[in-house]
Image (cartoon, rainbow, N blue to C red; front, side, top):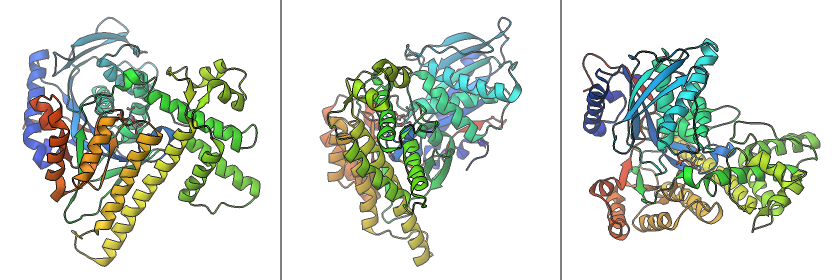
Length: 533
Ligand code: NG1
């Protein structure tokens, strides 16, 4: 699935038919607003979508595989490079947002060799700057350290709700990085390079994020979910759900509880990243031979539960002289048992307890190693619960993939029809896995919230096979696996029992529940004489 980011010739290359009218209006608005803001047409538009995660929650930063899909909502960035260079050694960025009352226009003169991002300030343009920084690093690698970035005029429009668990940040960062590459003459942008630079550069905004969102945003293909694995190297493969009668749909329901990762990072997202990393170090110290070092990897803090997983089985094989016959599924089941026996403290571990096991002289060394990049606020670290969630969620992803593979091979061998009716129990099994994820997120990983739990209960009662939070959690969105003939039931139940009790604007009410079809990933639109329509 690698290769260059596609160049779209028309909006039909980007959006499904049902979205075309709305998107054409929106893109035309972007273009005319660009002209009224800057006095000329943009040269091109870059586009990256948000995503919904089907399964594999909070395991990407432990480097386990996940199954997201892109949605229609996206970030579009119109760009022109027609502006004079500012003072020697710098380039200029003029950036504006279609929603200009909410997101103020800015202008920056930036030195050629460094992009300053103040992660302590919550500022919308930081997301652009982090894409800019990553893209410039790549451009410098390609063209040498003397590379002179082009000045840019930018107008952006984002429809992925911020803090809604649909990855507005990754859509913005990848669209920005793609825009910078294209502005600097690179119209052939490798998807893998773009994804990898966006993963690393998004961390500059103050969140220790994994790589799922950027991968989904860049690699997705219309009509398919995306299986993303992170080791030994980033790989993304399209995955189809079996055609069933009635059709299986993905319903996305907002909770309208805004979860701002930037603000709550020290007690939520970033803390979970630290807890998982500490769990890996702790399990390594106790279960692997003394002195074993975990391999450095692409996870946010450089070592991961996946790294521990591989090291543990590689060393057991080496020490026993036998090749392990365990499948990955069996290995994960084994690790779950080991975790339960090794990490026994339900109440969590203090800094001194962890430092002692890791052989660190004091808690300051522990903080230096694990919490200095992004500060966290916690007295105790729940290593047991976090490792149990990660290993069991990694297992659920494999089980779901297995179900899909088995069903597609049995349907292709039993029938030549493309609309095979899939047995009810396949859908129930898929749904059960989503429900188990929700249980684990609520009870073990503690990343759900009362509102999301309620939404899931209402949806299941009204006919959803499986319902769970999607994305980071603590609010945001939920995803539901619903047969097409039950969609209205679920929508009505949510309206009656949840949304009618909130004070929502008309726009919020309309966007509260959407049926989302797997959409396409990043694209560059270079324009044309014919215009957009
Ligand atoms: P959201 O908050 O939905 O964009 C975050 C992370 C993902 C992943 C999920 C949890 C960022 C940009 N994204 O997603 O990498 O860890 O939480 O599965 O931080």
